Length: 354
Length: 160
Image (cartoon, rainbow over all chains, first blue to last red; front, top):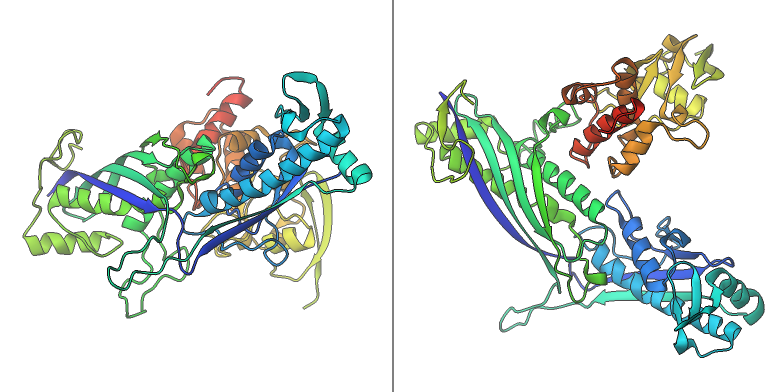
């Protein structure tokens, strides 16, 4: 009986968003009388950072401080329509809609400021600190707050914008089957090291090394947070979480946290990430967003690492000790595949020497 | 069933409520005392989202009979900040991106506070042990462990 080390690799080309009859997202932007901007969305922030990223995008497009932008995702009954927060579409689809809405609001803001300064709107620029001034003449300026007040109480106009971004429906060509369901892909590659106990069938992930290409990382800390947490979820899907153990027979399915296993803080895996930034052309400020692909490639990489360690090819998830042991039994024991160049200390070793 | 009177201290406030005998402490805190910071995750003691401190010791409030709180001192996340000043743990969680959806955060903070109150300079393993009863679905735990160590260092005047 021995502990076997293995290394597995997986890569992913991940489509950003989906296309089932078209994929639209809308945004509405308006200013308050004191020059703050409200972004109304129906896209939901469930912790992934939708509010933070759309706030940055709106502030950058409007040319105002990020502190002066509020994002409201409160109510899909009263907000502008959005398909939802899924398919890793948020940053790309909603971000593009926010750019369009913010650009329209900015145009109105510049026109209102031009009236107040008695200049041409095309000659004005923003300093990103709450002021609008004549290009090359910073002293000829008006604050965004004064502009908004003048627009509402003197000029009788709104500073507001509407934005929609639509990936139109793409049907398959009846002759070739060709279609364009998505416009933008993100990419990643992972190397995962495991140890497998051929006596108990237990698998432990010992290290993850990954490289993610997500376009521009609009908020680098949020990107890192998603990648770390998402990879952990991938490990959990690969090794622990059993939804339907004997599907299609529903018996013995988990009903609560006592029967639905998830790793705890004691199973933290060291994870080294390289984020490669290649801004995408049709993405908001080049950001595609990490989303679901934080978790997806972890599963095949672990399956490959287990095969590398003991020669057992598991094609059902999660890869429980029972499945590893059945595979070992069918093979007549562990069959390390070797070649795991660089895996620390390489190959198998008697128990107790790990 | 006739309700019974129950008095306890909740984050330095004296609370007096009438409860149905057999109520759990989590319901009394949320519905009786109006403190919505402890969360109900699983309601069976498996997730840790409802963790509160009773006389400084972490308890799963969903499994605690409310009447056991009689005369005792209950601490929740609602009492961590002093006025506008966040507790160092809250600041470290925020600055360390130790929350995503946030549902586990209140329980994590209370487990962490109980640890740091007793063990001001914990090792990484002690931090992991202290939050081992708290499930988190989003972060992979590492930012949480880091944040607790950062807060401990800050409270001791060190840099982590």
